[in-house]
Image 1 (tube, rainbow, N blue to C red):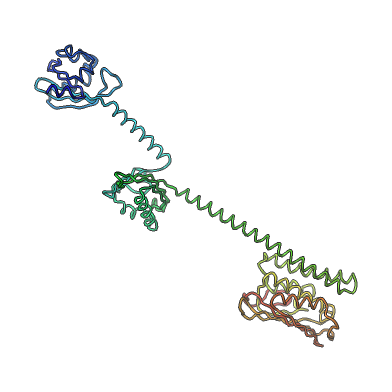
Image 2 (image 1 turned 30 degrees about the horizontal axis):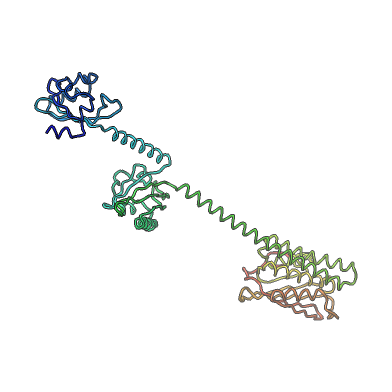
Length: 459
């Protein structure tokens, strides 16, 4: 028996009821760094006088008096800073004591506790919770912070994973979360996902980061963190929306720049054509100047109407009013227009404005508007057709001087026919003795109701 006790690494000694050492194994002798012969028979309190009346004596008295064992941790008497695991057992003539140095274990436990405390403080500061899942039982352990993030209470601790998903997660997020977890298990890799949980009457976004716990090639569990990212998610969505809107605005700006370039080129081409044709047919430089000026004013009026509409098209009534208003003395006195409401695209609106200007100018010079009492009827119809409507207009002059066919085709006539031809239309001029008639046709947008706004006697 003595040989066995001497082979143990733990220090062991026995004291009698007078506190004299009756036995000490080799480990205790080494611990005391004394000869064994000098230990046996010596009072324990002579060896460790500082512990007289302390925790050791109290424990030994208790064991000796009650016959019940005791175990506790105590700082080493001979080696301050080292922690001993003390176990006292009653024996027939006293107390047997076993001493084990557990300093390394205690220090590791203390370091772990400090580390866990620091980790918990960090998680709390980041508003994160932690959780773990056991593969064998399929049950979840949720930290207090995680329970709060999920809007759950202590009674939900230890729920099965599938039940927790059904209880806490948004229904639309359950399957994606399940698939992400299955992929992480299959590949024994990183697990990251986002989903919504109900808390405080609203769905809030959470982000989960986790890794599998693998033993012998098998996933036995998972440990992870959860963080409320709801505010970040909303901010990110707002930022994405702002970026998308900015990109759309840039695209619209580029489109507008291209459209502006196109329009400027068209305007310059039209101005060039008006100037060249007018100069080539004018009787004098002064007549050419006046003709060019009037035609450019008509072009500007058409553009004014389109500008007011943001270049999204213009109402036919507005184009008529802008083109023929200079020839009116009072609304409906000289030009009587009637027809359904039709909206024209910008190019068609400009072309028709120039045609009406030429008809009006010709009527003032030679036709019904050149005399008192003369007037013009402008009627139109709109018939549904593929891609819009077939718009047909008739310009008919009344009570003007007798009309004679011209001996040559002037620029005004060519402008009328060419302008409408560019709009998939045509114009036919009839020089009837009682008044000029111009029958026009072109493709236009779908009518948006009947009637036109006031001016020029429009109903």
